[in-house]
Length: 246
Image 1 (cartoon, rainbow, N blue to C red):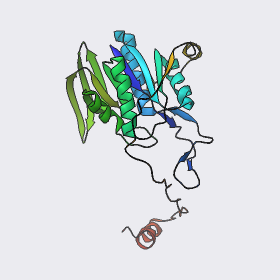
Image 2 (tube, one colour):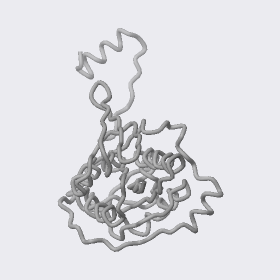
Image 3 (cartoon, one colour):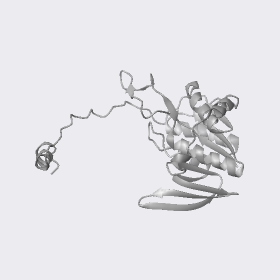
Image 4 (spheres, rainbow, N blue to C red):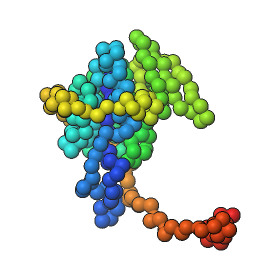
């Protein structure tokens, strides 16, 4: 089984977020980048298939050279090779088109993406990728088993879970629950050293156009000062007169 794991290069959640002077672009100065957490759950599940079912695992990212440390980390975790599509990620449609080209060229059986990236939270790429490939699609996937050409997946739905059976090729949008958090892997020194020798192939984009463009960004309004109530009566008065919620 050939598996392709889509890796987003996203800011660490502890990073302080800023934009340029006219609020039209994200300011990356001083920001630490990591593997998108939803993708990391998918990568860990792919490693399980590699170790238990002899699958091969490639990782792919759409981005410039600055994303290569993130791909190298995925290689250090255990992926066999990496592919970087040499263009900036502009919107979900453009990224999905570029990923679809890589998936088609590679003949992958299973494509694993995170259900959304934690920076823009668009949640568009996995579904559009499946549509472009004409493949089955399971979003919010929290469990996956593959036997031969058949797959059984569990996805989260309102108030419960749904179990689905389908055939490969399959695209999933994975999330927390796809593997246990305790199973997520931290690259060890041997893995980091081996990752330096693994192939990281840079391919030129097919030139897909973006369908959308961010007009501007705006940060949430700063929180007001905290007022502590010293009694229940004072709390009720504050909720009634100040917050006006009761």
